[in-house]
Amino acid sequence: MIISATRIRTSAKAVIIHEGAVLLTRNLWRGQERHFLPGGGQNPGEPLPETVRREVLEETGVTVAAGHVLGTYEWTSRPEDFPDETERVHQVEIIFRCTLTGRPDLGGGHEHDHDQIGAEWVPLDMIPILGTLMPAYRGLFAGMSGDRFPGSVYLGYDA
Image (cartoon, rainbow, N blue to C red):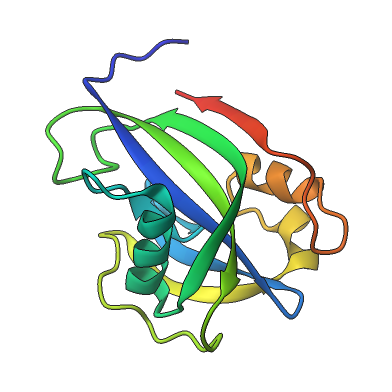
């Protein structure tokens, strides 16, 4: 299904694994508590690896380095998704495998998304049953072997 969007927004997301857990943000999204990969919108002229580094620090207080791309996911926003926007957005998320460059302690970050209520390390064995995690993200983790992922994948489009 094609939904009319008036602009494209590129976003960089992070998969950060430490001691058998993955770092996720907690958000109130569309009236429900949800978990997301940390990350966010790319600024003009900003390389995507820098975007993911900056966004993870802003949202969680954790410092990372971007590695290889794990996957790409895209979706079209609803009016309530981005309250500051006056138009529907077609978001393209580039998901990076990131490594910690500092301590794993969550410092809370200094610039949360409007709907973010926290961040936490979630045990990897909880991912398949974590109902608050988007199905596309759960699918990304389903192909893991230890802490290794299959090759880069297209995770789909949600309208």
